[in-house]
Length: 300
Ligand code: PMV
Image (cartoon, rainbow, N blue to C red):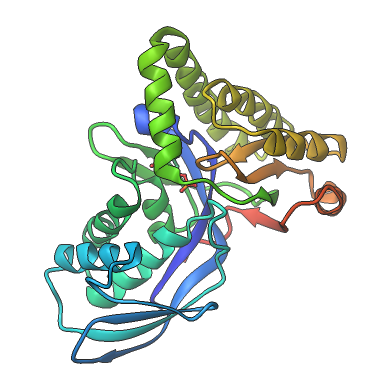
């Protein structure tokens, strides 16, 4: 099936741009190609919302499509209808999921590396320096260990299902602007910022062991430490901090922001029986949307 998965970054966002490892999990939300027919011009429509775009239409989606088509070797024009269940603008990878679904349509049966190269060309339009963790997770599914440097290098990590509550606390921020903000702070304060990025990488390394062992308490504690690191590098907000505090008070093993920050979502690791109380508490605390799910079970 021609799909791209939504994703959450479990550990290592931002630090992954600077060479540290990240762990990301595909979600059971997806962008799916409903219809693809040969046409005279390239055109893509997206439901819900009836968004339509095409190359050179002046939109960023149109520009991203143009770059993806160039990376795909300028295939014959198609009219493509996409259907998405990935929330938009929440840092859950809707853009990368669209890119993967489209790349698979233009390059049917192509090896993963080619699909990833096409998706990367698309993602570069939205932020100039993507680590690649989003579209790699969207294409491969499951849980991915990802390192950018010298590669990128990525591999599947097999874990027992991790009960996770994902809550969007506020509108998401522009990923490129957040990545640039971290780079600027790193230039101003290299010593402490380097230490904070290393802390985030250390959390990702240790979390892999905890996830594989199914040790949710340890995963939660590492999420709390990672959230502190993300606050230090300047990507949290009072709303995200409050969401984490609400989740912990409702019984989550730990919580952190996920993705670029500056708004968007938090994730909370929960022992199975705490999922509904954590989700209810976040709902009551004014979350825009709450998703109770399991990470690590959505490999295609
Ligand atoms: O906005 P998101 O969830 O797609 O965040 C992307 C993750 C970053 O590490 C902030 C950027 C990147 O390219 O890895």
